[in-house]
Image 1: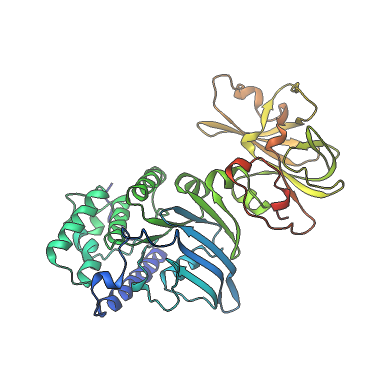
Image 2: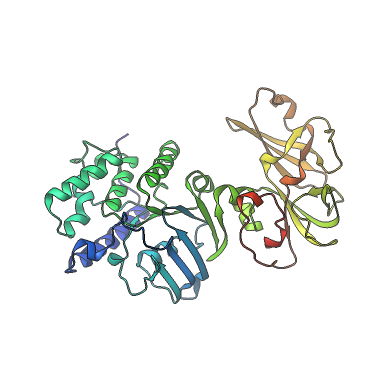
Length: 439
């Protein structure tokens, strides 16, 4: 759907700031008396360069008294889709601006292709940015927007036309070269911004929440398109978002950031299934937590007791000492809701009785809020299967039982930070993780 409605004041400010950054980049780059291949290295001639394309080593960045990043280290592999995930103000965009060269750290190093990038201005880093507000020039049509960077480099007209048309075809915008930004839909404007960034053949593409302004359906479509585009081009993508689902769909790896510190980095499935800290667990959707202390270990797992006397089990915490205080978490979708008490095959199954206080239909699933004897409320989700319990039998007031397997319990010590260790591999996702967790 085409839209020419004016943006709100905040969006206009963000767009102007992004355009100013872009204009500064191209203005300085155009004054350089360099051939194109001397100014930047082609993203397609990198065979002899190190496998780690971007590395931050002990980076600190402050804005006055505010610490945006504190002793931050991270490696980005060549050709991977890495997502920086975290709440607003966690430092995600600061990392992008440091890598792009728009900001300089107070201490630490930023390496690109194994070389210190500190003395390099943005136009020498072979890194391009897709801004949150796209930063398209409203007075230029689609062709000129995409061609802008190439024109500043004084490339031959035929070469410019060839590369622009190739990119527009790649992002599925052929035949729209003469349209202006106000004549495009949100998804089309996003594709133009992508094409403009990619036409310069960067080794790394930085994307600062480029899908935030799109509606849900278009956003989901563009998530898949971006992932396919990265796989086709082989370019490294560093993507910023605060949307957990978006990160899981698109990423090879996810780096979870909190208050300028790296909480966890690893494959998407690992970050979701084996969060290493309570913050990561909660941010990745774990909604149910129990304060517990360790009672004993056995072949069936570790037995815990809650503050109200419930016995809970875990198979992911064999290293905890008896009496050790911890927090036990469980995902809403890992729980099973039944009307009768389940008959487990062994003692080591978690069973908690409760009363439904809220039942919500979510389309493909149902969501229940259940109050247990301690007064705490737990959240349970279940798919809309053919054999699912009728909604009228699980309406508010219904007496139910919640159960889950011990290997779905996530346990985090609470008496200070535990020793840091490398993230577990995919094969170790369900192994002991207490020594890698922080409370």
